[in-house]
Image (cartoon, rainbow, N blue to C red):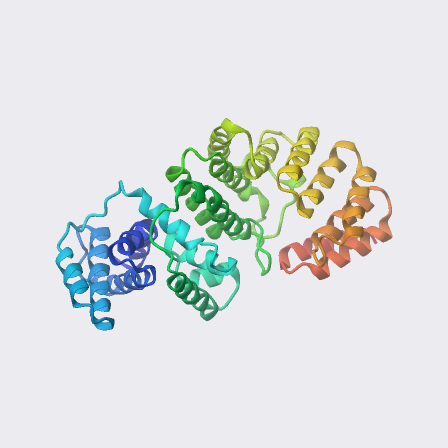
Length: 403
């Protein structure tokens, strides 16, 4: 077994291993460190002798590393003796202990952590990504990622966060935080905020894997299925969103035959589960994505329905981005003049300062109204504000066509 095999096993089993170790030691930081040491040892030993039970091997090795660490750093001999005696238990990871994985997700997304630390810890301990992979995904340095993870673990330890599922009432309150972390990870993968790539599919698909895990662990929560539906339906368009050279392809120019039909089916199935008790914010966004997915073309899209869904989303989860997207839908349903009034109101209230999205939409609307010099100025402004090189190139090409 080579490096790829170790990485594959770790990616699949990491959450259950770290969760089991955390319950075993009572120390989240120690558990994650011990698991990483086991992976490092596997990279050396597995190519020489492949274990019959790779996941069990990682669990047993990490358990031994945890015991060694406890022995080195504490004088509590009775606790060490207890752990050492327990080390002879079956190396198999109990797949039925799904609460451990769920508890791990809630710890990684605990409110005491900064948003950056939540994302880094979730990708590290739940998704099993390395510091290098997280750094590449979010275009930050490896030391920055490692510092976020270290600070996050120290914060959890200092706050005395227990390894357990929150009570039912608190769990529902904190579930929104878990969902928002997965959403942030997926959003970065589906439209990178900076860099030279429009898409980061590896990041997006890790978010989808996390959403699927959460849906399996919390099947009675509609918004979990709503987020999964949104991710699946959005990712279904990935194959058609970029050309061979990585350049963006706009929605109206995409070859819809390249959309992933299987992902659309999975998304629609999740959306039906989300609809059992009325759609929340993620479910409404998924319903918008489903309307796009069911349309044969931009012209044949039910834009009136999308406008209504954005209006509902604006009441459930009001934000300037929702209003901007509603303006785009209004432009398609009722014409650009009405939509421009919505955008100008956003500008007057300064609700999206510094964002390239507002001048992008305003430039498009002005172009449709025949106000070409104004449209070009807006698109050039959007290009200056945009940090993603691929998006910037599209904006500059559009501005150039307006002469």
